[in-house]
Image (cartoon, rainbow, N blue to C red; front, side, top):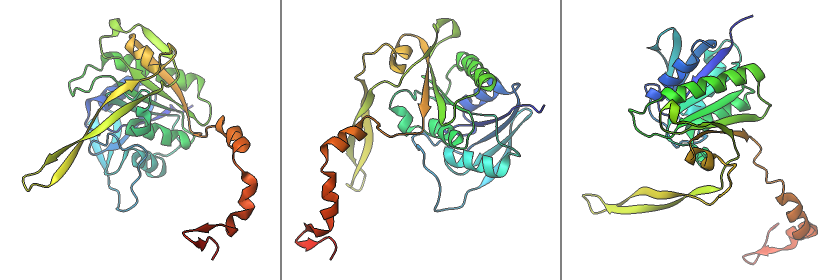
Length: 273
């Protein structure tokens, strides 16, 4: 039997301390290959590059581990890895370890999680890891231990199709973390605003700012787990359908009126004119 093939990606860039920590955490669990952006790509979400060519360059940053830097987004890295770099479908994709939280609604914006989502779309068991510490000098020692444990569990027990895991680790030493909780995503969001300033030419420019607000008081959420010293593990799915809304629309909308759409007018002109 061949060793498990493990793809490592991230969004902070191939030279970030977090990806080094993740490689160290899983390097002896199988054959590890790194494909990561050549520069930070935080907040890119599921963006892909379609209007310019991508560059892929082999690097020598990790002992005994093949690594490549990509000029594109985290999702580009996964797509290129699957199509051009790897000789077979990976047994596991791990993304991170991100500098900063990707709990709750942050998953929507996260390049770290989008890379894991893309791998999952390819049928690869996938996990995104994040540490609640934005410092470049963050201590990843505890995060490495939990990343290794979760990777071992996924390699051993597999993962249901069309799903992946979002793992967030509190800041602090290993002895300070109380354990691991399987959670749901909290109902929380960013309340944002843009600071307006003037450049030297007197023209306005804007900086995004805001605060994170948790509306969810449940003790089964990722935000509760993290606030109380636990590692949060949230199973994530691809299907964004609000299934509970389908019956509501069927009951309230006048769907029979669809037949008359062509006879209605917009701005005084018939739709079908």
